[in-house]
Image 1: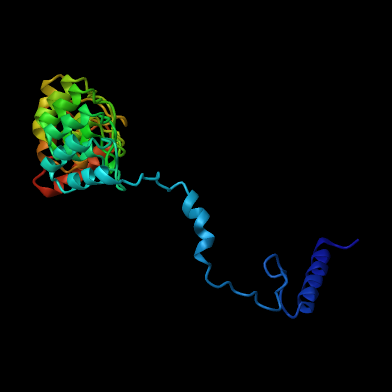
Image 2: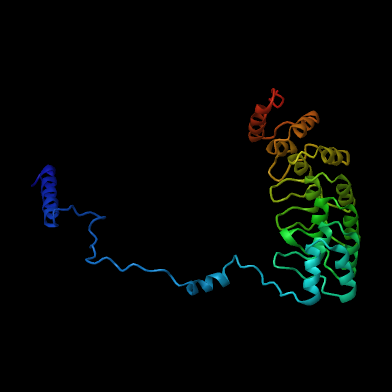
Length: 286
């Protein structure tokens, strides 16, 4: 009976012989494939028409936009150029569809609301403009008016049924947009109209945290005075102190600490430690 060592020597010898037979190259799982004698023909440029199906049917395809003609095109052009008086006169004289939109998604109402044009907004709503239809940038008329602080437009939109619980395409609620830009009078209007101060945007922040992130101290104080808890946690279990640190808002951080807020997670303290490099240890943990 052959010994184990003898078997190993026999197998090794057979492997070496096989390797020599194969043109002097060792055969393994990577080299045992047959090498083509002729390199395959390389493809040239692919004709553009072969991609038409992808262009037309991909998930990135935007919804088709109706071609604007006549008074509708004129209305959009005037609104785009901020010729508000001419737009109002055209609307009354020609009665175009108030819900048309251009290739960028803008509507007459969203443009008028963003421009603070109360009379034009009133006329568009009277003629059937949808108060919650998103415009350019995916913002609702109420959202864009709130963002820009157009109090009278906000009042009119709310009076005509615009909803405070319809976010824009980016997940921002009208209240968040007003908080981000420090529009205190608009914030009050929206809260009176029933805007949810606990609602979270796409980043998980509620209204107080959004104000803190952008350093809007006046809005922060306004919300707390209206009954919003200063230590209200957001969707991810963080308080407004985290948002203020994320936004590197020194005054907001200081004020929140004065209200007794402390970090609710280690990451918040890390952000505060980083922010402390600006100054003299103001944000250091006790």
